[in-house]
Structure formats: C-alpha cells, structure tokens
Image 1 (cartoon, one colour):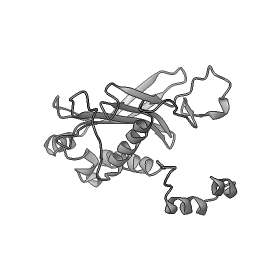
Image 2 (cartoon, rainbow, N blue to C red):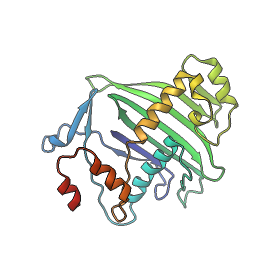
Image 3 (tube, rainbow, N blue to C red):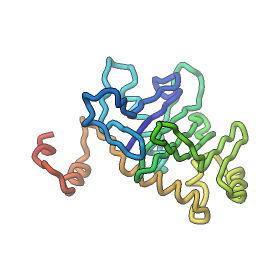
Length: 223
C-alpha cells in the first residue's frame, strides 16, 4: 500500500512535490475509503485531476521509475526537469508491506547514470501520531556518508562499490542479512504495483486478473 510518493527535479517538477495518501480523519464523509494499519490511516483510492501539463502523468511516471529501480529493470527512462539545469532527480516512496511501513529514497544523476544517494528505513508511528525512523541503509556519495546497522564489513564494501545501481544489486545480499531483507521488501512490494495504460491494457494482464478469484467478473469484462 503506497502512503507517499516524492519527486523533485524530475520531468515537469522543478521543486520538491509530494503525493500523500495519508487520510485526514477529520473528514468523516469518506471514512469507507480509509484503511487503518499500524496507527497509519491510508486512503484506499485517490484521484488526480486538473488541466493539461500540470504533472498528473509525471506523478504516475515517478511511480514507474521507482518500481523499475526496486526491481532493477532497465532502461530506467528517468528525465530531469528541463529548466533547472540540474541533472539529479530525487525520487522516493513510503509504503506499507505486511503491516510494516518503510521508506525508500534515491537520487539519480541522469547524465552520468549514477545513483549518488539512497536510503532505506522503517517508520514506526505510535497512537499519538509521533513517528520514529530507523535507518537500515543510507549511502550518500556526495557527502561521503554511509550508515548501516552494526556492520563494519558491509560499510567498507558499500564505500568501495560503484554507483551504477543501488546497493542491493551491487553486493551479494545472501552474505548480508540486512541487505537481503531490504531486497526482499523492495522486490515484494514493487511486484504488487501495477501501472496500467487504459488506452492499451495488456492482454496478459487481463487474463491474469480473470484467473484470480474476483467477485464480479462481468464488471471487469465491461471495463
């Protein structure tokens, strides 16, 4: 379940922009559209609307890019904003996976095709709305900063590997349980993300859906 999408200096977005699916519980009218897990209230569905060229499609593209990075799919196709003269795109997502909330961010140099920053953390929220972040991995090549949990060997390796991919695809994760956990979380969640072009719905995707146990196949067929 996606909680927040972050995009900065990517396509039409020259400044930091967030799409938040956190529900405002003061609005009781649409309570049926809210799912509550681990002290997070999250919208089940959201609609993007507005005139042309304001960024609706670009937000969907940002989700595509993040998914590709999580799954190591190429080409990434990430493009910076045309007017900032800055080659670094910053993308991130907060999401829920099996009742745990995680945050994943990366900065990508589109000219050099390098990941200059990445961070994976867990977000815990208490009943009062206070949030605590536990960083599992942070690699900042610009400021020469590396954060890992109690693993000096992994820290040294992260300092030595290249920047052509994120850490989970540069290092043998089976040797490092911490990295292996991150890889499994990102892979498992990314595989649940479906970005469907309504003008060109893939036949294979349609057949896959019909094979599942769905409540109303006629409704899907009409769609």
